[in-house]
Length: 187
Image 1 (cartoon, one colour):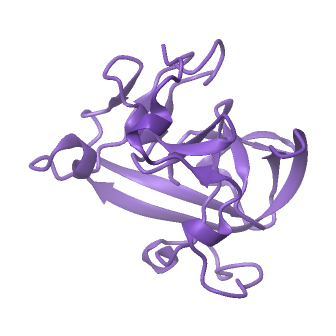
Image 2: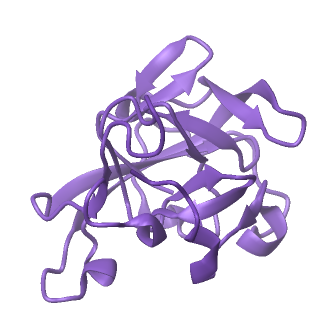
């Protein structure tokens, strides 16, 4: 759900650093059901500061996860990608939490980053988007938006018609069982 600074998000006008994404920008999204690119407007963008708790186990400490260049496929991602552990990548028509893909070699907790800012980008609806060439998710507000900062005076374009949840409002299924991440060819 969260990207670290300098992550490049694909927009209708090329790749843009996540920290420079603004309300109304046009994201490129992947409609995986019909295998087609679409354009979707950014309806919200937020920022939050994180400090890892080094006393906790890796999966709970809050270290970001580094996905090395070419870890997922040749050219994917096209540069190292840094995300939070609960961020989801999109594989085989479902979302997989990054923490489940950590292998200690090409995808690992980056202990050198104990304090960092991370960013959320929300589209008109929960979407598959590109970051550094990898397919992953846009933000889905499941109740924590108020804990983020936003630049400018406008907090959100449009308002959700109801409370959202992973079970009801995600654009694809989420593979959270351990077997969901098994079998992926991760370098």
